[in-house]
Image 1 (spheres, rainbow, N blue to C red):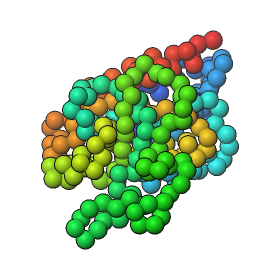
Image 2: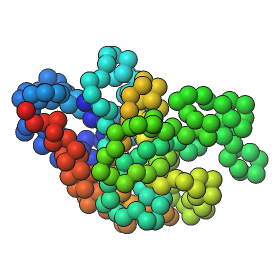
Image 3: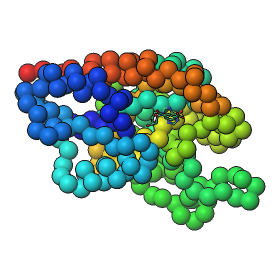
Length: 225
Ligand SMILES: O=C(O)c1cccc(C(=O)CC[C@H]2O[C@@H](n3cnc4c(=O)[nH]cnc43)[C@H](O)[C@@H]2O)c1
């Protein structure tokens, strides 16, 4: 398994928990009786994630699932702060062009349809028959700049009515996994709502606690003999 996070901070409790249970460590790989868990911190954002994954997948095969874990912002108000969700689709929210009126044009609108692993709507989707996990399934979207302005958030809601969870890395993870024929498992714990920027409303501690509890529940069978 390859376990990825943008920052060490987001999955530190799980890395400590895995290290306590591992038979041995080989660099960033924790070895268990039946499997191993390779831990990789990609850095924050789409370019850093794309580079880290390109380098890792180019250097040799990954044994077992690809898991990306982190916090995220909820555009969907029915999501609770601290809720852990699985992202089942992703898109690069601002990939394309802007017209003179400020409207977004997709790649296909400007004669550059991206092709697989994107679908015709320029969405990156899990393949049919993917493994079900005990988390609410949500549509993700990824940005380079965290949304924090009421007007741009309204535009985003109108343009992407299905979008539920915002992150800064998810689409790069989906793109790399799907391009390599691997199933992406992306877990996000909701740390904040996508709203006019107000850092005081963020519940980072709660989200990280919930994320790590969920991760450990999911990883427990991998650590057992
Ligand atoms: O202080 C800020 O404005 C700020 C903005 C985004 C993230 C942070 C972090 O400290 C965490 C980095 C991590 O968080 C993900 N994240 C969490 N909420 C959102 C969001 O509403 N929109 C986009 N990304 C979000 C992101 O994937 C980063 O890796 C601080």
